[in-house]
Image 1 (cartoon, each protein chain N blue to C red):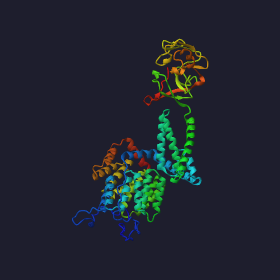
Image 2: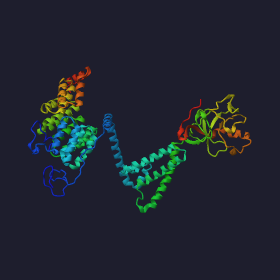
Image 3: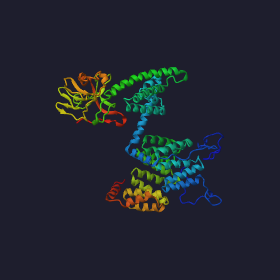
Length: 259
Length: 337
């Protein structure tokens, strides 16, 4: 089961989610959906809390554990993410995505050997998901391997209904590795399909800002419209508007070099 | 039991789903679902360490330590318990080789603390007590690390082994002290030297390698075998060979130049006596307080002054560099101008 299989992109809420009185049933799926929304709004702390709420409803809810690990990684708490993945793996030993998440945590924490080992293990499992391939791409990009792009293509090819999310993740990944031009391609596509996600606009804006494109301001403004009190986005917008000659020159050079 | 993930009906008592391996929740199963969190400062610190590459280096160091531990373990398995006893010459290494990290950590901590206290209090009874404690602790760590005679029935043998190891360790500690701290010694002083804040009864730290002519200037506090003393004492160097030393009106006068009484005080037993002598070659004029009963000269001090104050070069053992005790006044001595 893919972690995004329950995501809804603009569809109406399912009728079976509502109780007879019309209120949403507050079960683990409810909290998981709220957590995914919080993640796409860039509020990782809230998303983590909501995943915990989902697990309070059902302790063996896989998406809850996996979501917590992802959010810990988003929050930069890699050691905690590794610890929590170990705990999740005790409950779900066969899930390759957890191994992939652990690979990402190790890679982000600077231990590429362990990251590679966990990624190898995850990919060796039966039918690795798109997340597993993307995690492999992350490890390989850190190791400056050329196969990373193939992994990204495989991840997007396997994504099925969650292609926009995968494109967004791929774009973020490429941006983190300073491949802004390639990242732009994916992020633009993701922004067109996930127009209601503040995080997507924020990352799209950041990528454009790195390249010195004027569209960055529009992307940040769009992000702030969706989540008005997001300080990081407001700060990024201010910084972009105040950038000096050097910043503009840097963007120009990056564009010229096709980064 | 029905699997919450895939709905597969499993046999009762199974802990994981046969089809999808998901954990089957038993009634009353209590799982903590709140992940551990890192504080803000810890996250910032980790970020800095990652940027500096320190965390990677630390990890490599830890991995190297684990590899070393497994190698030691392999050797130990082939050599037996005595191998761990030998390893314990460094406290805690035997435990480390056996993979008993927690115990090793506590033992090493206790040993380091008592050793630090012993060095800090060195020269006093408390210091000697702490060194004794270090030896006992070290011997115990070695016996425990080697897991020698660990059953209660072997208690007598264990005590015997402990005493044997303690004896060996006393020899090791004494040798180590000679090698590592051979130049340092503590000495009592009976003098009051106000300028250097040295008072009667203070214990001074002495460097034994500073006995050359260049190192011992006038006014230096020196450890020496003084007349009538069974143990070396700290005295003050006043005159050099060929110089004429005179005590006039309670003040030292060397070659006609009076010395500052704050810096070069005249000992009580010499006050009121007329002293005038030329320091012979191979000797130094060193003053200290003397108990006149020791000199057997309560009435007539004059004949003993020469013997008490003129010290042969060989009898000079070192130069005091620090006030060591009392702790409240611990500090380096000022150089005489």
